[in-house]
Amino acid sequence: MMNQELQQEPKFHELELPDACMACGGPIAARFTSSGATGVCLACRRISALSVARSGDGINVVQLPAGEA
Ligand SMILES: [Zn+2]
Image (cartoon, rainbow, N blue to C red; front, side, top):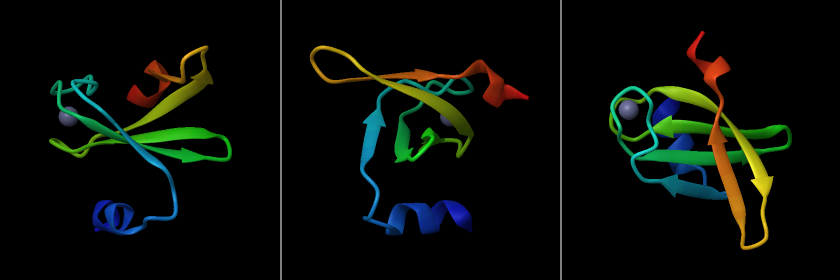
């Protein structure tokens, strides 16, 4: 299972986003990549594309609707 591999790799910074899943409202684990970020729901395993932007206080993560298709 790819999802299990994701959780075993400590190389990438991960950020947990509570209640962020569009499908079930569960927590999403966001992984940052060179091109942005990918989120995996910890509850239903839905994978979604995330947009990451730095704001004044820290990092702002937005789920991209395009990940739905
Ligand atoms: Zn979910």
